[in-house]
Length: 80
Image (cartoon, rainbow, N blue to C red; front, side):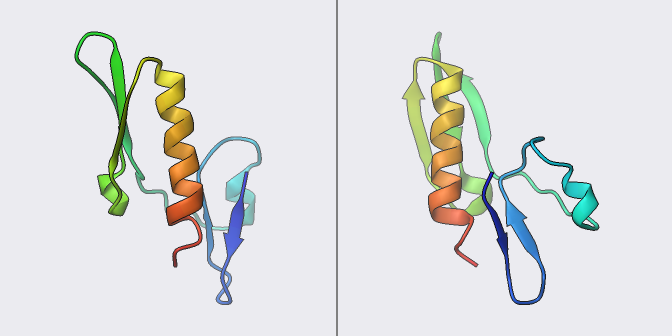
């Protein structure tokens, strides 16, 4: 898990449960994307909640989730 801490002490990360983030202070969680099924057996990662693109389609949901995390870590996490 990558965690970014700015000079004001604000923390940004792509949420997962590898550490108890609530132990770092009050949390504000917001959706970064939507991974949704399309067609019969394809998945897309829609990153519009953070101003990003739609990624995919992917045959596996796990591939869409992995692409979502990569994009968020590369393009959103350190952008502010």
